[in-house]
Image (cartoon, rainbow, N blue to C red; front, side, top):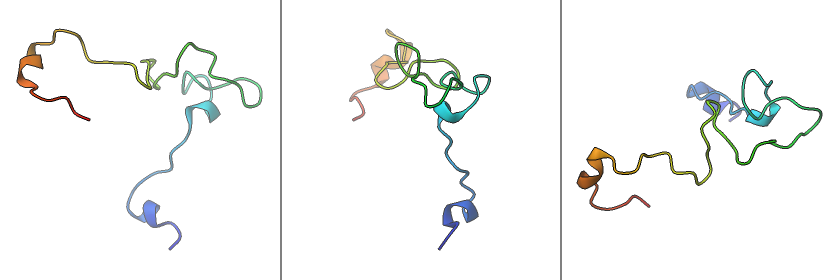
Length: 69
């Protein structure tokens, strides 16, 4: 039925490219503008889509036996 996700409390997903520049790094521009950066970023400016965000040589690395797929 219509609105099933909203009844479950899930709010609509809004793309960063349709936001204003003060709301998201991808926002703003005239029409359907490109990202305008070397790679896509999160709303907080961290690179995303394949960019590793975990620090190298982290103390807890020795506890990770198998990498998640």
